Length: 256
Image (tube, rainbow, N blue to C red):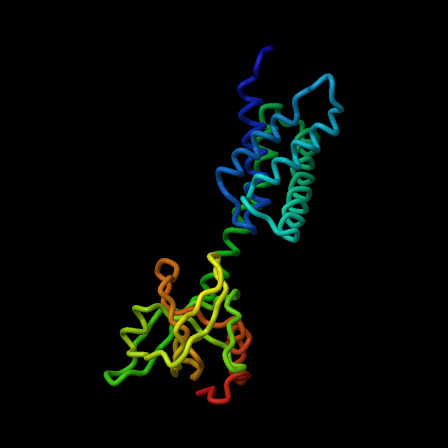
């Protein structure tokens, strides 16, 4: 059986780009995505004893299942929908090539451009979103204000006594001299963990010359992401978008 290198490489590239673009919102494994692309390409082979449709669907589902090590139902559903939508767009790109009478060699250029542009667009949007979620946080000290990098963490839903809790690193806590007065239990990948809990006042700058002053509980973590110093609460996103709105969960919060 003669193997066309261009077709094999082109099919694999389009399959990988489609899987990669569909799985971007889920932060899939690169190794899993590469293996998934191989399964999709193999699913296009002709197996005399099997129904082509059943075989291809089985290989496609298997490919989607190996994209991540673990899935929740909503994640897998989202991945399937993303894959179907992008695949339909890829099919449309192939049809467009035929309508334009472009050379057959351009087939994979047209088809690969769809998931490639999709992935680049999503990545650009994610970068812009991350930039908007990075803010400067200033804590008052005896020697003046200390400034740290803050991140509006949409996954931080911690509360203590009805107030939102921000998370700071041990290094930041040491610089500020924050002494724990209790603890708060948080759910991590390794299970339930107790973090030291204190309290602090701080300013969040949402513009160069505009800020809000808050007083909330502060959890101290010994394991923060690389370069992360302060993880702000998700409820602060809406509050910071409106200058006249204070953080409703903290009685001591106020706008300056």
